[in-house]
Image (spheres, rainbow, N blue to C red):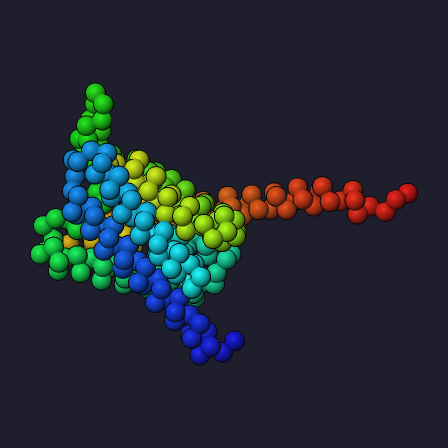
Length: 251
């Protein structure tokens, strides 16, 4: 394939990833900024559904074009699972980051500055849970973000990439965002998406724990890709083992 043919086929994918991530940050981070902190489960559910529904509708819209990643960790997971090329993955990540920053810039403009925090994810400090208060350490935050990304990338690889769940893959992916945020939102902000975290962080100039919000989802994504690949190999071996006796010639 010539470079021009490759760029022609890559351009709509990059535009789709840009628009999808832009929408995800504008709606997701926007909901977090508008709903705010300390509003209990109804508020967390609103933020969770804002993220989940946005991913779901744009995965339906752009899934056939780019796969609808809208998350550098998902792109790295798909790359690690051998389902895309490195150059294409790099283009996706740049498009996602640019979309995220522009989404956060638009939020900054329409909300009149950065005073709302623009939905920047943060580790919980003295969060009242039951009869105690919880402060999430960077180590615990890293584990939470990595595990949430593991869940998301597992679902992406097992539905959209593997072709299971048919046309309903975007629903499964969107609902994974929602269930992750209902649990993790109060603890870490539940970004599990370097673009979702970095867009608002860059625009507000608040880069607290930025390394964690970038590194942890990538670690979770790579583990998900390794597990997905291992499970696929085991399934192939089992199928081959079951088929072997039938292919043995009769004595």
